[in-house]
Length: 259
Image (tube, rainbow, N blue to C red; front, top):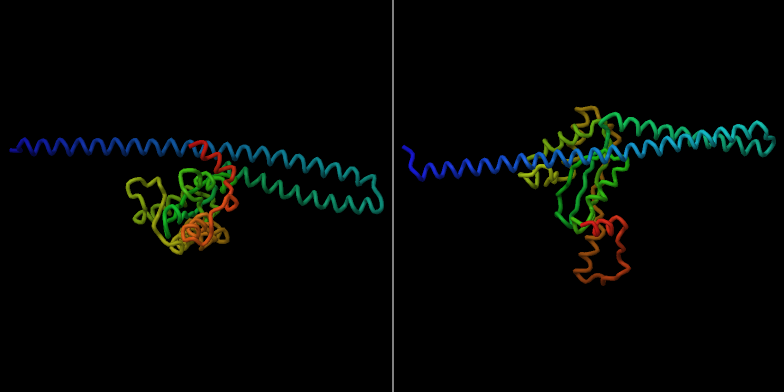
């Protein structure tokens, strides 16, 4: 027959289990909300880029049409100049159309970028964040992550274009799950692993899924970590701190104000 102590311990265990499940559910809901907000933000940016691309195409078409009309009335040297201008405008229009098609494809598919970044001043060596973004300007996501919440900006080691970026990110996270820095909250996406292992794993997954072009897989092996290295130099007396050493960017100043 269970004693009072046994029953009390069972009650405490069940209470603890309930609170853990409740916390896990809350974390999952928070993750879903964050993902939805990120997707909405990225879709807005793609829509904005699409409108800008459409305007650029119209502008190029209008300029090309005007040059062709002028060509009909031109002669001699002016005609030669207009021929060169028409050739240049035609090339620019083709580039604009290609850009427009790329944006439309990003809007209709799951294409995006896998990023691999480090911050040795904040987290030490061989700690990398592996994440994804569907923004048309993926570097903007790294600027956000380098805001006031970390003492030093992140360094980009890879920015890999993918046709199905959520799938590739999920496969990478699963592969490195046992090397996750935070084994309680998997949303943190930081892993204690070598860059060579990340690169070889990306190549392996790319070959299996066929959603990443081989020439898109390029890694920068050494982190620049400029502000961190300058800070170390100051601490060891190699240089003297000066107002001219570093000027915060607009993004960092704005991020400090929003904290």
